[in-house]
Image (cartoon, rainbow, N blue to C red; front, side, top):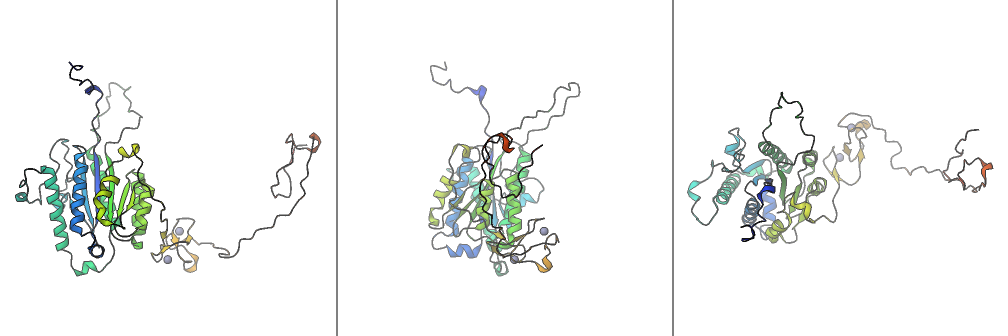
Amino acid sequence: MNRIDASEHYDESGFTSQTPSLLTVVIDTNPRAWAAIHDQLPISKAIANILVFINAHLAFGNDNRVAVIAAHTNRAVWLYPSPSSNNSGRLPGSSRRRNGPDVEMAGVDHRRLGTSPNKYPQFAQIESAILSSLRFLIENTNTSDLAPTTTLISGALSMALSYTHKTSLAFEPPKTSADPANPTTAPSTQPSAPNLHARILVLSVSQSEPSQYISTMNAVFAASHARIPIDTLSLYSAPTFLQQAAFITGGIFLSASSNPRGLLSCLMFGFLADTEARKSLVTPTQDSVDFRAACFCHRRVVDTGYVCSICLSIFCEMPENAECLTCGTKLAVGNYGARPAVVPRRKKKRKRVNGAGGGGGGAGGGREETGSATGTPVPP
Ligand SMILES: [Zn+2]
Ligand SMILES: [Zn+2]
């Protein structure tokens, strides 16, 4: 029968279920930055493009998850899953029922759902939740929030990492207790396949804030350790620390600052593949990475500086009393700035010793000049 309907390739014996993929989108919602590019790409259009991208990610697999965080000027806010479900103590959107409903209904305007029979309900729920959370955030942004010109990217990254960790735990297979009657069933030492492919995408519209250097890099190294790539799509400038984040974690950094209107194309063709699919793809890479760091003393991005040999703190200038501001180690700088003292090498005539009588130990040819005054001692 299989041969007749050509369905023998539907062999379910070797079928393995798809590993779910979690996409955490961090949206830079700095009002000043969005005002700067409003003529080219207003935030409303950008959100519409992001929703299309999120729907495409969810459509790739039944178990795929999404989380959206707004990195605002002075705080990081959950847009989806809705904040109300966070307060309940239960992990939002992480029902252990693999095929069950994924969406917390709290905070969702039910009247708006189901109005279009042509829209997949889950897409409508997520869209409604993100839009209502974003509207709430904008309405609750007052002038005091606009005083800092920065964006709290580091806080949003930390929230994304903690949510990824929680979701990963929810997907862990249940632990089976060891059978005491059969001691031979030792736990397998084989590395198990990951139960969740997670990645973080930052939509950035502002430059990196040097005061967040340490916290941002801590989050980046934590993501690198957990093998979570941090992708960045920059719409306005080239954020220094996020370039480094993509480089360190193996993520993708793309800049659409020349034409922000192409946001959807960049998202769909540059960032849709999850970590598993990227193994088979040649992903876009950065031509150059801005590796500059921020000094620990003034939070300035510096090209060259002093580095404590103990704790690797970076200083743009010598700290007072030459003591590291972080760990207190007395730093010995020596003659900083002086030309390195290079002893001119004396030109020696190369002696060529032939035969065994020279004591060369069978080395044959002449010894390489090492600059050392004495040769290698030989046994008598
Ligand atoms: Zn400094
Ligand atoms: Zn130190």
